[in-house]
Amino acid sequence: MNDLFFVFSEVASRYGELAAAFFATLFFSMLFGCPRKFLFLSGLNGFIAWFTYLFVFKLTASLVFANFWATSAVAVFAQIISLKRRVPLDVFLVPGIFVLVPGATIYKMFFAFISHFDKTAFLLFKETVSIGFSIAMAIFIFVFIFEILNKAVISRYRTQENTRACPVSAESAFLAAVDIGRLMLESGSETHKVEETIDTFCRVNGLNKIQSFVIPTGIIATLLERKNHPLTELVRVSKRSLDLGKLAAIMDALTNYYMQKIYYSDLIEKLNKIKTMVIYKKYEQYLSAAFAVACFSVLFAGGVNEFFASMAIGFLAQILVERFSFLQFPAQLINLLVSASICLMATALVRYACFCSADILIVSSIMILVPGVTVINALREIIAGDLVSGSARGFDALIVAASIASGVGVTLKIIF
View 1 (cartoon, rainbow, N blue to C red):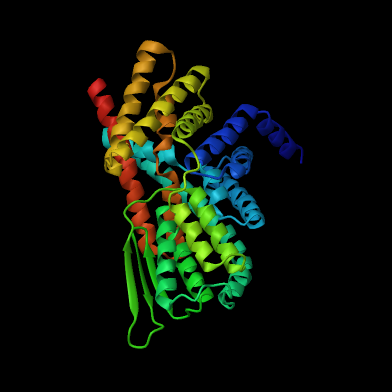
View 2: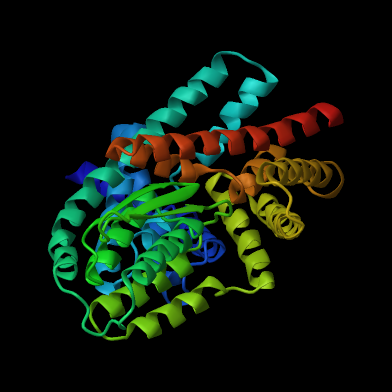
């Protein structure tokens, strides 16, 4: 008991890291489009994650156990808050696990493979996989428990048709369901949640014979209500990003519709507004990236010089991401160019401006690019049995990590 109290006191004394975890999560939540009213709770979840991680690691000296129990604490807190506030779980879960995901380790692994193919690369690969699976398993276990509790609520919607629905045709309701699924995929939702939403929406509107198949890049859905005339809709989704604000708004609109608080026409109007919804202005995104990167430099054992230097790099890097995206550059080319720019800026600051660690500047700054959350979602879907979607997301994450490592590696080779 005394040992536990001693460890607790020692972890609590690291208030600088805990504060950095809180604000890093809060500012990254802004980059993910988290609604303003939930920013504090998202930051609090990051604080809980880092505190639990440090506490368990002090007791066990195991990265796997530390990440598993930290993610478990995040998942439980996120589930409770999401149920209470009636918002998607990812609004609190994704920001909460961001301080845990092995994004920096993934980058270091690919950089080691590219620069010197040796034992270090394989050790980093082993560490990445073990941490990733520990986080994914914790999410799967605790989310599965809460989803069992939610089945009763969802089944109530499925067996009760909405009496406020407009007298629309089966085809119109079916196409609306597919459009909702497309909007969810574009906003970063998981494939099984999209399938569940399409199924629930159709059943609420009296359509019981519906089949849907969703992968990260598209939706195939078939309506079998009409005899001998099935209707199939194929939608390709080529533009995807994580927007927690849109996911929360979609769930809020659908919940109100399921509970018969709004009419079908009101729902369609709300969904059309959500498509063009923007929560944070450009300058807010730039500032949030700057402060998030600066806070991560603290978590990577950086000092005052690294804090302010990484803040400047993060600000400029986010501007580059936005500009390249506006010019419709391919995603992997954006990652390559921005990571190379980060490397150049970090090297220039170390050589000519301030005394600080180039490694800390680079690793903390590329956190706005690394696919840590994508890796965790891929593992979650594979564990849940969605092999196609999980494999696709995993391959996408590997390409992103490789492009980032290539940008940094090539730049360092040229400079040195």
